[in-house]
Every structure is written in C-alpha cells, then in structure tokens.
Image (cartoon, rainbow, N blue to C red; front, side, top):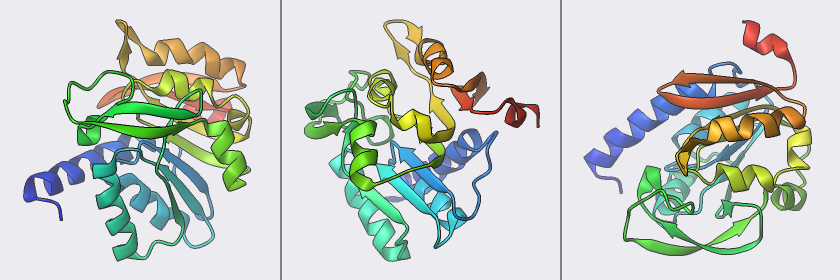
Length: 212
C-alpha cells in the first residue's frame, strides 16, 4: 500500500515519463513495448492499455521495493499483457548491488541510498531470446546511469527495435546521451537529443518520425 506521498510521486513520475517517452512515437494497438526501469509501473500500465490484448509490454524492474508495488498493481488491474522481469539490465549475467531509492534506484553508483539489495543482472540480448521477443516497436529506458552497460548488452536486440528513447544521466561528468548517440547510429538508428523534463536520446530507424 502506497502512502499519499508516494501516490503523488507516482502520478507525477508517470505523467512525466509518458511525456518524454512518447514525444516522437505514439504507442499503438498491438505494439510490443519494452519498459526498462519500470519503477511502480505507471508507464507499463499506460502502455498496456494502449497496446490492448493483442499487444505486449515487457517491464524490467530489479528493485524489490518497487516490484512489490508493481506486482500488486498488475494483479489488481488484471493486465495480462504485462510481463514483469525482476532483473536489472547490463552487459553481463550475474549479480550486482542495487542502491534502492525508488525512482532513483541504481546499479551504476548514482544513488546515495544506504539501502542496498543484491539483484540479478542480465543482458537484453539474453532476455529477448528467453522471452522469444521478435520485433519491438518502442524501447523506453530510464535506469539511472546503467544505460551504458545495458546498451552494450543489447547488440542483437537493437536490430529488432524500431524506436528507442533513453533518459540521460551523468557518468564521470559526461551525459550518457552523448556517449550512446554514436553507438545507436552504428546500429542503424537516426538519432536526436532532446530535452523534455530532462535530457533524452531518441533513436528511430527512419528520419520521418523526427519531422512530425
């Protein structure tokens, strides 16, 4: 059960995330969506309702405190088109320490929280094969600095992604959007860095979407 404070934060974070994540690509019925960094599930729920019964949402969330709320929300709303993966994404398989701070939880050392959990980590390449996911219409990622390793572990997966949006964070004083931009371009994406609430990196396999 969320306190009123966390209910307010959840509403705000969900509204904000929908704004930047769907700035260039609007989720459609029957789409396949990857929500990497699910938090309390606000965006996953929004996406699940948009894609409908013939679509699917794969939600990655490693923080046990967030997972507890996310699972209850999925059950309560009976959203059978959401698959919850209780792992963090990286460029290797194993375990990592996650500093738990709700929407700011991080395995990349960006959170100052003293509450630490040992969580499973995997690669997006491995998870997409395991889940038998083919094409992906939208990949949204907000994982507090771990996006560098997550993209490094998604070489094959990115070939099947049509549109991607990554929330940027600072690593060693550099914006991850700037570091990831050439990597996405090598994977065949046309890219654009845009600020909506914060700096974000957008990628699409066609330039047309950025001309709208």
